[in-house]
Amino acid sequence: MSSDKPVEGLLRAMIGLLWAVFGIIVGIIFFSLGLAWRGIDVGRDTVFNTLRDVFNVLGTVVGGIVWAMVGIIIAGAVIWFFSSVFPDIIQKTKTATTSEKREDALELLRLRLAKGEITKEEYLELKKLLEDSR
Image (cartoon, rainbow, N blue to C red; front, side, top):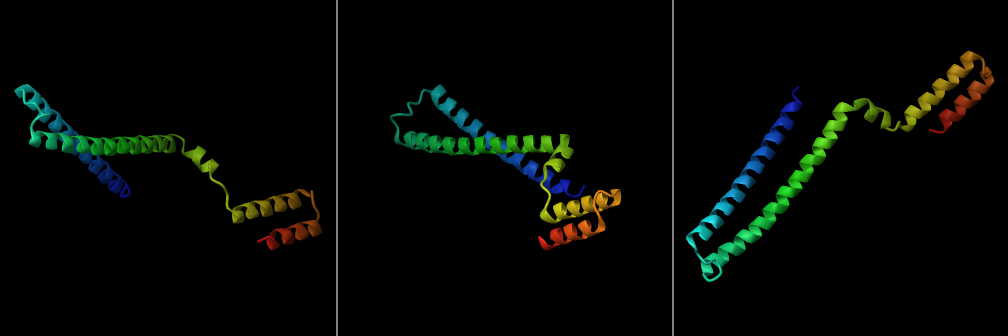
């Protein structure tokens, strides 16, 4: 359960960051609506032109960051979903290492010897071949 704490903290931090971005966006929208409601012509005044440019850049950067975060969150959710719903499929798709494959081959040799499919000499010869291939 202790491994859940860092994940929970990360999720809380991401949610907090999303709320902060949402607050900034809402603030920008209300600021723009306030200007429009008051009838201020943003195009003529230098201060408002500067603010407009700053908000355009900020909106572009924040928008890109938000969409990147949304993509990362969606990808993480999909990976988490499939790894928690189908854990045995993931285990089966893991490739075995060479030592595991060699051990499986040796086990098959032992079984074939026990069943009488191969002789002791054949077993020793094949075992030596497998051990030399390390």
